[in-house]
Image (cartoon, rainbow over all chains, first blue to last red; front, side):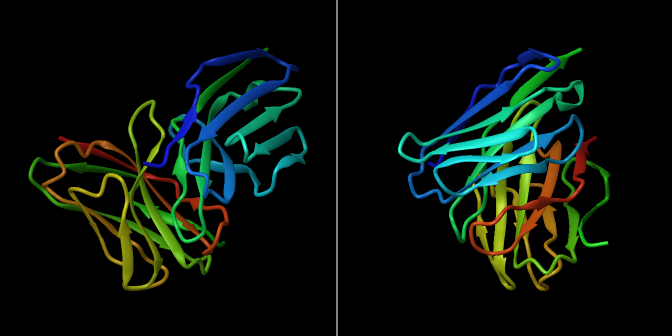
Length: 110
Length: 112
């Protein structure tokens, strides 16, 4: 059974702080890794994807991948109240479907 | 506009009824997916299809059926065999390979 594990939270950070979200996965054959943001009652929207070990930055977001440790993380710098949402980690092999974790709820207080 | 359209947005089902959820995409994506989300939970895979006229079961396929007669369309039928169908259903599509998936706006199904 392929599994993706996330701490359900809630993770609470003050406005302007760095939020750190973590994810581990069980399938060593996973090739691509994604972070989605989901607001309550809405569908998930893609924030970041990463394929290779190391860091990938996009604006205030940085995704980090360590395949040896089977670990993916998302850092959100200068957190804003509008970042308050559930963050879903997903992994994928080519030719298969995305497998999702249960998500981490982030709350950013002003 | 390119995108994924799910309909209806809200759907009510009586006990013992089959209902069909629509999913259409105009992104020219080969792969399409159905997920179910329960309150406070992540997304669980129901079915996915990589190509027309072919599909694979996900982790929770029991009580559901799909068809893929056209590249653009991947309807999901929730049958009476699904004992607890009340949930938020999400359709997604992607290019084949290791690429990201994009989601429709979802259908919220309630059993009355």
